[in-house]
Image 1 (tube, one colour):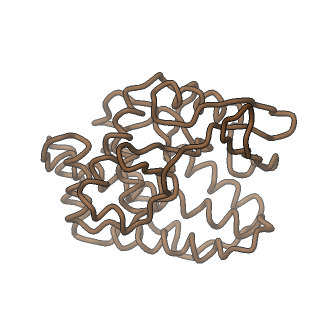
Image 2 (tube, helix red, strand yellow):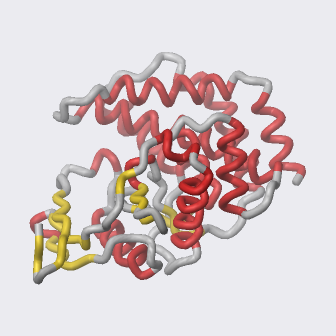
Amino acid sequence: MTLDDREVVVRKVRSDAGLLAIDRAAEHANTVAAAAAGVGAGVVEHRPELGMTVLEFLQGRTLSEDDFHDPAVLARAADAVRRLHVGPRFVNDFDMFARQRWYREVIGEHGFPLPPSYDDHAAAWADVRRVLTATAGPTVPCNNDLLAGNFIDDGERVWLIDYDYSGNNDPCFELGNTSTECEFDLDLTRAWVAAYFERDDPRLLARVRLQALCSEYGWSLWGFIQAGSSELDFDFRAWGVHRFEKAARTFTSPDLPRLLAQVSDG
């Protein structure tokens, strides 16, 4: 639609975000901050009582997973993520370990079905948390949900949209989340990390891979909550199972001890 001769997008959100721990006030504030960073759409009007926000329309196309195989697209996307990360700090923090714990409690309280082996990886999950926490650096403003559809490419620069789960976080979580959401193989993950950091660094690559594991294990619970509570016509359980199965493969792989050691010893 148009408003005052401007093309705009009207975003309407559901109010029942409690099970998913979405903070709508933080989402709005962080959307404004992302626009100030020059990487997000500007906010034209915000009507929280209606669950509606009017945003500037971003010219460009939504990326697909295959687009990241183009080095030019990959470089523009990495530049967009860097611009977000050096922009104004967000009003809240995001911690996937805390989020995973919250989601697991929600599932237990509501009796939503969960893969029977999910909790078998609790000890390995604790090891990952220990290493990432012990080696953590400063947090930066992160989207935390940068799947391919949240990148808009106009051919010269990339924009980032949808800040439902945004918050200050480890930048390597941002990179790891995209790498697993977009099904990057190891070579493309390496190129993605190098494009963002502008150098090859095996320890940073290992950290991104561990954070991809955190994304898979944590966000899989989002899918199981949605499968048990959402009225949308989408197979959320299959979505969650896919991510859990990827996490389980890493938890039981010889790669995990090597990644933990590489991050710890850097």
